[in-house]
Image (tube, rainbow, N blue to C red; front, top):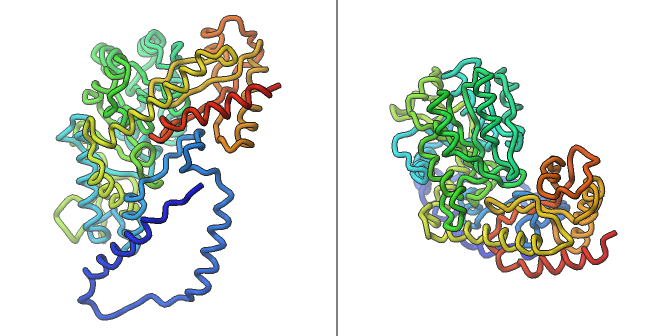
Amino acid sequence: MTIETASIGILQKAVEKLADGYSHLPAHTTEYDQQKAEEILLQVAEKMWDNYPYPHPQYAGQMLKPPHPVARMAYMLATWINPNNHALDGGKASSAMEKEAVAKIATMYGWNDYLGHLTGGGTLANLEALWVANHIHPGKTVLASSQAHYTHNRICGVLQIPFEPVAVDDQARMDLTDLETKLQQLDVGTVVVTLGTTGVGSVDPLPEILKLQKKYGFRIHIDSAYGGYYTLADNLTTEVRAAYDAIQQADSVVVDPHKHGLQPYGCGCVLFRDPQVGRYYKHDSPYTYFSSDELHLGEISLECSRAGAAAVALWATLEMFPLVPKGNFATDLSHCREAALALYARLNNDSRFITPLEPDLDIVIWAPKATSTSEISRLSQLTFERAEQQDLYLATFSYPSHLIKKTFPDVYVDSDYTTCVRSCLMKPEHASWGDRIWQILDKIQHNLK
């Protein structure tokens, strides 16, 4: 794998520019053993070889998208100051950058009057959304699809809120019949709607869930940690497009810039349609909020100390890649989906494979065809292992066997779950690397036993 190095020279110029802003202060330099530091860094570089090549197009496994060089450089530049975005006296410039960046994300969903901020990741962002939801509907049940991220069940345990999963349909989307049954049977306060499940990338039917909201009066939280930016793509199906267009009507939204947003870990974002939910965060701090009458981000966040560098990196990235339809960022997302559709089409048209569902976004799951679910699982695991030997890095996913049976009725179900092969085609380059990836898969399949 070729490591990008041109950014090192750009970063050098940026660091020198940063230093100019503090040239009026008395001279001071940090003293350290540079030779020892170099020796240690070289050891670190060698230890880092023990990673999969995440930035390379032949890494097509988990949702690990490399940060853009501009994000990486901006993050690193900010660490020379190391701002803390809890209070303005700890991160004045980076707090302003965060507010600007979050406003651009909110505008992407059609929100101009809102409350929101960055978080350390999607888990904290979802926790805040459900924490606020519980203030509005205290003690009421939270529902999410059985394919939603496990974090919702876990968060409800932490917050001591009742949680119930909702069944999914043949496309691994929230089943509306089961949802309404649970709405009738339970005291439901919030329904978590997933726009892009992390397992298979399925998009829940938000427009229909909004209709049920009018009838039953629950709160809607959108977990689009993985799929949120896909609202900008121009090649979604009509059904999926309708779900994204309806986000504006939801009560809260979570999206992770460190997934499709080209950011280093960790960078999540939570948004609330009603700015008045800020009252639930109100607290006093005797030593952090005195420096300015402006809003301190710590006043609307459960987290305290938080890396200002994440905000700086996101701001820089949005300057380079505005969140607009047909822009470079949006076009790259469409290329990711093109890559997924192309791989799905090849697999679906090849009798050696089964394809449980057509991708809604850029995640594809498939498996070698076999007579039983246990044999499918064995061959999927073997495919995963053989691919790595050919420098193609995939992932596996446990899919409910009853859903496999619905799609392929001839299969004998002898296990509750079936291991499938899973690929997150999150790099726009995957659209042009499809032939090479397919050649490796075809070679593996010829020798699979």
